[in-house]
Image 1 (cartoon, rainbow, N blue to C red):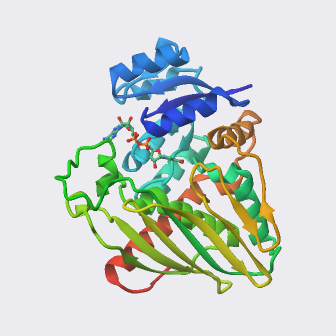
Image 2 (tube, rainbow, N blue to C red; image 1 turned 90 degrees about the vertical axis):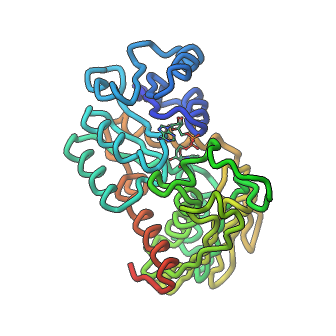
Image 3 (cartoon, rainbow, N blue to C red; image 1 turned 30 degrees about the horizontal axis):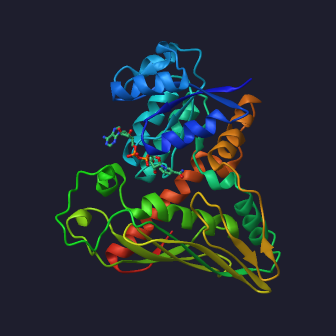
Length: 340
Ligand code: NAD
């Protein structure tokens, strides 16, 4: 059996997920949820979606009566994940939600509870958990192949905006929600989460303390609510430290781990790839895969077999990152070390 998915929110990333679903072995694109009628028409034609499986944000709860949808994949702005995960759970559907899970830890708790109460499973859209280079760096770190990892550098940033331009800024661009605090904007939420994730899964540990510094604001019009760049440091129980950066004003995409008997690194490391990596002994060489397909298949295979999702992809895992993200913001705001 394939899992029938309804994509909720038809923005940029939903387009990539739709492509992944097209080549997937364990799921089909059965439905859509959108606030834009013209998008509904376009997607209906392109993916052959039956009219009865098309919802808007108002009538979405009626999906409870639709036996042809097994799972809702929430691909909305971050601040809207909570509402739609809870509504999907109440409609008896499994849910995948995009990263970051939500804006606050309390929101994450409510999402987890709603899914538990409804007896549905909640998965995070963490694509790198099913990507061969990342499975390898996780193995190298957690199995201590080069001994204990002592130091990690992880950074992900995109030049999303020309922050140095003197031209008048139009805040109303496609990425406006990414500049709005209440909607879960800011590069730490959007991109920095990959640095936190990779440090956590390479070490197999949870950070115990963070320090952080906001970066330069070159574009004061756009970045009145959210940071333009932020740097932070995480301390782990083993004594390992991670030094991380994220930005939407400059490009960076790299991961480096220094262990007692060697190192491993990747650059590009955290984006859609293709990745380039090496260890102190050899090049890392793995097939280039469709990240969205692998992630969808990894999750949907488990659901199709009626099994429990592995811990690393659940809502509890998503909540751990939100806890760290909020500690990082607090550390940067207060200018002091925050203990987790
Ligand atoms: P986007 O701006 O392209 O799409 C957002 C969609 O939400 C649009 O279709 C928009 O119409 C809709 N929407 C509904 N209510 C809205 C509101 N109040 N304000 C703004 N838009 C509203 O964004 P995106 O890049 O597709 O990101 C969507 C989600 O996917 C985010 O959670 C993001 O973090 C995540 N994402 C994940 C990855 C990944 O690699 N896993 C990559 C990109 C984005």
